[in-house]
Length: 404
Image 1 (spheres, rainbow, N blue to C red):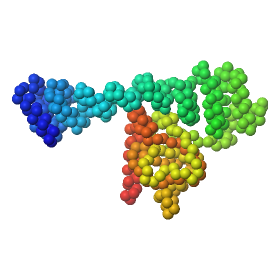
Image 2: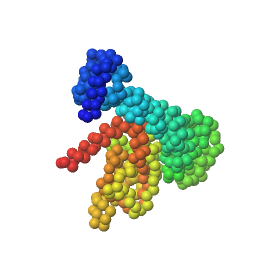
Image 3: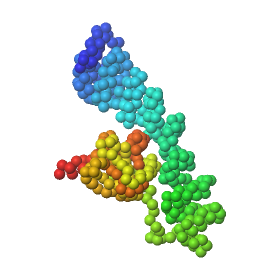
Image 4: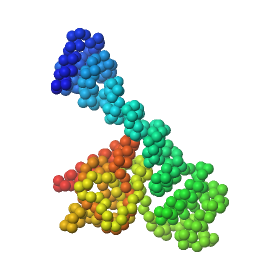
């Protein structure tokens, strides 16, 4: 209250001299409460005003002492008028504070401009992307050499080939494949794209999927059916799958029941995680492209008990042991294999890991880091709301189960 008392004294002094401000009747209760240092009363008085009356108070604030405006900013924050508080802070040149409040007010474009004025280019880029201003976001990501964010932004801008080239440079094979899926059949580089997708699938042990893709691509046009390069790749895949030289084999792929099991890429596993259960298709695809495949040797610490969580790990191949700690006297709690996931809580809550996890065999996994996920939440507002809702629900269920 000491600060409020000083503001009150200043306003009273100015009032004695005459503020030179015409304070309207509706907003008078707000200003009088501020003069008396009664911040809680000022907050409630402001909340009781209509939108037009609140706008009048904001206009009046331009003619009161700076200390009074600062006190009003506090009132607006506490009244949850984040947009109004941001306006006042911008007028004072406090762009970083204003940007954060614009985000709370659900105005990412205004937030982006404020972050930019504050020199926070990475946060400005994320806000532009969230607002759908993808070209402006891309410009900033390029200047920052943020290639992962550039690739995501290019994908969302319907520029899949450029995105695929970046993912290739980053070594994200699954993300490159997903980006190439967005190239339409009529694209002049379609043959090159199909061949690259086949190569990626083949490298991942999914030669059957490559064969199906190629067979479908050859049906897209007469030119594709006669294309000698596509024919040669078709025959190569047939031989690779043990189907002879292909001379007497139909272009139709074998029935699903006859095909060997595909090596999982993690998409279905990611989709099965409860907190992602309400994500729309494109949002889930964006999250999948953000993930990175990692290889973990046998008998390696995957998560250390007590250490800060680093993000989500989805097991694709291999197994891990979950135990109460790293010591010889630790008790093994579980053994997890393909499809299991670890560390999803650390995506949202920054805290220590509650269990110790060590690889029982060599492991291949999909990793989403906490930093990448926070960027994802900042640029996918609708997805973030769904994730937080399900996260809260699942956390409540865990607490209820522990209580019972």
